[in-house]
Image (cartoon, rainbow, N blue to C red; front, side):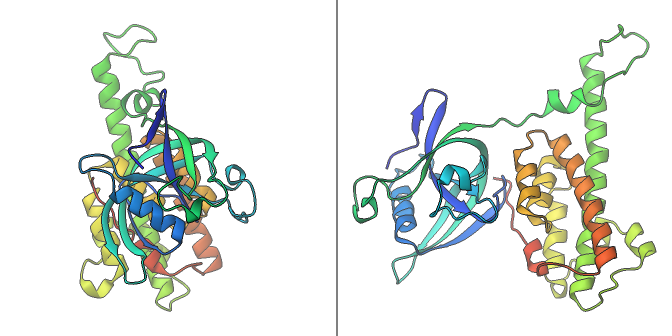
Length: 304
């Protein structure tokens, strides 16, 4: 298999369905053991150096089995490519793989392998492939649009805001929103950690409300909480990176995560995360239970 096949402004790429979405910048470790995906890894490693070695990760809709229904119905329509970073062959013929989330895409069609393709070691790929179109990140223009409506002042024409003013307002608003999400996420991580450690009542409200990312422990004894604190520091000046860290790490449903992946604007993604984190904090206090282990927070990220 060479580089992704191109069809006009679209491309055909290999697909790797998973139970949860992948986000840009998030590290994806995989143990590849199924024959068809062993073939996928072999095909990717055969691509010449300098070319893109990537595959598309798409989430499976809850309650659906890709093998038992039409894959296009079982898969969400927005995914993220995974750029291959490390491949370690195993004695059983499988692979340990590390990849990094890269570009978001919309899945337009799913291309099925023909019957018997899995037994063909050099012919048609035995894994799913998808016809995709790439989704751009809506940053400056989109971020500004939500902030400058109704903004007027000396030297401005009614309904017209100078570009430098619009940019300053947008960046200021985005910064405040990111700070809010950082604080909410820090409180969320701390409350989950306390409840997982055997204190179902969680942190006192006055402590939780005053907590900030700087208050999270950073020593090795803190385990996953320290790992999350380190990641928060890495994205302290990166609103987009923060939005993907929260989306991939918070204990959200696949539907919630998918909605965050499908959102093209950092500002709107952060606004949705603010609402989701407030909801989750309220549920934690009301129910006094955490659905999954805290290790789910320790999702590695990279700036690449």
